[in-house]
Every structure is written in structure tokens, then in C-alpha cells.
Image 1 (cartoon, one colour):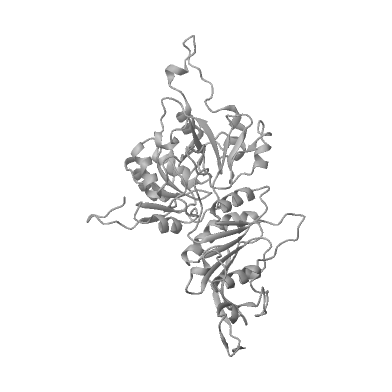
Image 2: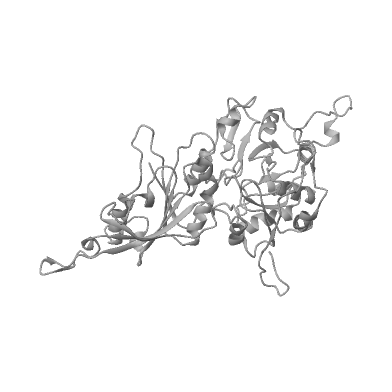
Length: 476
């Protein structure tokens, strides 16, 4: 733990990094060797973090192209245990290791020299990287793809990295900052997402500090991540090959590579709790979930009418507030609800709680008032309004009558609504998803309604996989 000299927890430091010139591959075609720039003025924060990684046991937060990672020396048990401690992550969940070049990867999977000699005593000089992965490496590395590799005996990796499995996941991030950090540390980095376990993955340095302040000492700030969802994980050591976790590379693109035409989906979208250890990171426990209840509306099938909102929810909230039904915990609230909406491709503004316009009635006697934009550093738009129900006093106060005659109609404030639009482009949705869930967490909403997308092609499968894991309830 990060601690000050008086024994109390110290605030985590964010070290800003100029990402202009941090290094390059000696040969971009082979990816054999990563080299640092001759002008090393921008490397000082990385050198400090690398020393911390090489000599200490407290992990470091750093950006990749996917999400921010929480890195530790993958070859030392005490350092890797620091990851599990900081995240509160179950120790039977394996970790992905990150390498800076293929030379480092080969050093991890090459068997001992004595075992590498054939019957004639000559050294077998064949490439230890399995041939099945070479087309993927050539096309997608550096990038958001993790490959599952056999873990040799004896292994250079700490046993906590593999969680007792005979394999380990490895990737080469598409981030000069990450590659130079690994190069300077001179060790592969075990690095899951830098969030508290089960919380939405972090895409900015501030997200990391929010979750892990006082639990780690250093976060390298290289700006927001570009992809926004984690890497795809594949296993090519079985037949047919398998995608174990969807991510930044789609299964359709993988099928274009030699030897991968028959690759199949090998993951589930629901939480995979049980006694069996997961084959790869992200396959077990409830991940990516905010504190609020999440209601995911699956995309409408192509043959059905496209859903443009969820106006019926207003009447359900009203009935729950009136103690007529139980619905998402609204019945237990003694105050107006706080409601979050995350829209993608088809929902109208305010998700149909309110007709798009100037205060017209929408849903069932509801309207959104006091509408205003909210300031945010995120790429998506965000608005706030108040959800009022009109002429519905009898639902909340069924006994409000005098001598059998109804009293004067009144309006009732059901809740405050925060409306986020991630846009229609799948990459924008992936990029903004975790930030949107975190933004709503910070604003302490009670329920989040999310518009799902069709999970075919590109990284849509990864988006929906994360959302289904986060969901309290799924509506079809």
C-alpha cells in the first residue's frame, strides 16, 4: 500500500507523460526489438515508474490503447500479489502479460536449453512462438489481441499470473508509452485493467485514481484510451481455435487469417461463477458493473419495429413509487429517483420519457422539465432534466379525496434524469461506454437504462458482452 512517513495512506500521484516521441520498433515488420528515442527528455516519468516496477511490489497504473492497466513485474510473486491486493481481484482469475517486443515474448516461452536439445545433442533452434499465431501477430500486433500460450516448465512467470493454469495470455499493446515502460522495466508486465474489481474499466488516469487512490503510488497519464474495451483473447492451441473473450479485434477479422477460418466463440455473456477456474481473463465473475442497477435493452431484431425509447418505464416507476408494485427498488426510495440513460443508435432524446420538443407530454402523462446540458470532459453529450408526472395524484395518493370528490390535480416529481448519447458509431460507443457508466456512478444514479446494439461485426460483440455482464436485468 502507498503510505506516507507517518503511516497514513498517501494520495496516489499522477505523472503526466508527453506521448510525442517515446520510441519505435527497430523493424516494424518483424517487431523483434523495441528501441527508445535518442532524445530521452520525455522518458523521465517512465524511468521513475520502471524503477518502481523493477524494485517494488506496488503496481503502477499506465495507459494502453484499450484501457488503463495496473502493471506489476510478472516474474515476481510478491509484485503480482500486489495487483490482486490493490484491485480486490480473486486470485483464481489469470492475468494477461504485456511484452514490448517479440524478443521478450520468446524469452518467456523458450524451454530450458537442456530440454531443447534433440537426441543427437544439438540445440533445436526452431521458433518457440506457435505457428498458428504468426498470422495474427503479423496482422494485429501491436494491438488489442491476446494470445494463449503454453507455459513452459520451469516457468519464468510467477505462478500467480496463470492462477494454476498450464497456459498464459500475452499481448503487445499498441502504445509507445506502454512499450517503452516495459522496455525500461526490463520485465514483462502482468496488467489487468486498473479498476477496482467488478467496476467499469478505466479509460482515463482520473478513473484509475478514483478507484485506487491510496492503494497504488503512481499513475502514468497518457491521455484517454482510444479503443475503450479490452483486448480480444484467443486460444489457437485447440481445434478449432476459440475466441475466449471478445474485444478490440472482431471474430470476423480473425477469420480472415490463415488457420483461423473455423474459429468459434467460446465465451458466455452471463457471469460465469463456479468452481472451475477461467481459461482466460474476463471469463469469470461479474465485471464492468457500476454501483447502480443496470437495465439493458437488447437491440430490436431486424424483422421487428425499431424501439425508439422506453416510455412505458415512466408508468412502472410511478406505480412503484406509489407502492403498487416492486420495480428495480424504486418502491424503497423516500425521495425522487435518480435515473441514468445511455443511448446509442435508435433511442430518442430522454429515451421516450419525454417527446423531443419543447415540454410536450410523452410516455404516460410525463414531461421532462428544467433541461440543461452538463459539462463533461468526455467525448459524449450529456443533459440533465427533471421527470414530472402530470395529473397522476391518485397513483401516489389514492386516498386523496374529500367527500368522494377529487381534489385539485397536481404534478409530481418522479426523478432527476441524466441523458447520455454515445452516438451511432460502434467505435464511439465502445470508446465511451465505460466512461458513461463511471460518470453516472459519480452522480449516484439509482438505475441506468442502456440501449444495446446488434452484436455482430466489428467490436459490437465486445460492447454487448460487457453490458450483459454489467446488467441487473436484460429486456429483449
